[in-house]
Image (cartoon, rainbow, N blue to C red):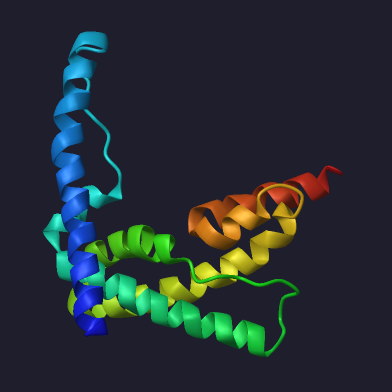
Length: 165
């Protein structure tokens, strides 16, 4: 029953994304034609979900499992003095999108291996970036953080420390 509820929830989520894109693209096109003629709407990662919906689900599930195992290992060995939560949104949108691309280039094997590595790397990046963000948005990154935000936090934090910030 739990598997059926999970599958139904993910199906509803994917359908909701498709419906939102189907509605928002014409709306932005109408606005852009009046304000900025010949412009093209820029769309976020869910635009490629319909090309391989199974890869999105594989990427999400595999990255959630590997990131949760990584969290348990980090917590079990007391490697960091703070708690990191499973990053569900990042696993779905960031790693699910990467899984679609990995599926297109490496097939099922590429989607699984890429998602597993991304799930582990995501948690490590978040753990490394939190010390740089303790006076700003560390609570936010623990819930919504992703690889891109974590990498920039580390880079700018190191630059800030070099120049005495």
